[in-house]
Length: 258
Ligand SMILES: [Zn+2]
Image (cartoon, rainbow, N blue to C red; front, top):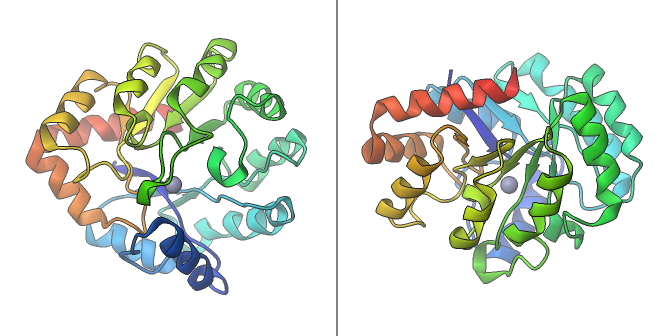
């Protein structure tokens, strides 16, 4: 079962506004509508069984309404696996409600929060997440459009990996968007996983292949929908590495999510 471990959708009443802002800031163009419906269609088209949906609230007031919305998704769209929303200014106690809401983890977006991932305000989240078996997806490296990842350099994750050896971590964009050399310092940690989101077609094919084969037992498929198209991403991986590698990605994801 292939899982897209990195996708974003927004509530129907706000997605247009949010995507317009992201397009403006990063100079990128969304490929699809950023709605649950459109994600579901894109998954169906590419025969991808599931997608992890990652909310990223930029204000703490959005956390509660986000969580109510994302928790409601699987009932209508069983392919979707929503993660919960957090914010560094809210209490980490919120993680205790995640299992009842069906959330298996949360995303940390250091640049959107202007907070380094190794900021002490986040450590109580990691501590509790480790205890509860929740997965943490970290944005890692720079941002698109030449926006420097001031708060998300790969090196900033080291103290988290050292301090929380059982915390399941996924570093997006193969560990550091446009910082792939630096990202390799994260490879040796057994609890560190890496997603392929927004790297295909940006990394030269030989570099992509070299990285994912180096970390082949800790890499998972991710797209960054709605900025990427599922079918295209899947086909590129098939072209570079063959169908068997997709099975490997599926197996790695399953290890994490179950
Ligand atoms: Zn993302």
